Length: 81
Picture (cartoon, helix red, strand yellow):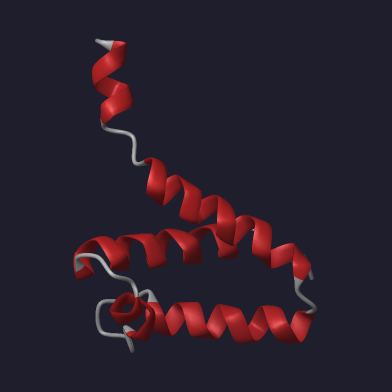
């Protein structure tokens, strides 16, 4: 496998959005975490509100992918019970 090819297919912007979500979650109290989780769940789906997607100045499909990555990272850092 050509290492250069595998590096060019890695999505650094989506990885950055995921890491941002993971970094944001621990900063919030439980109420704030719940509010952001609900907002991201609404915004990350194709049939959601898409307000965040509309605010990003890029192709909607790309914006949706980044918002979804943000949500995935945020949910990965979910506080324990």
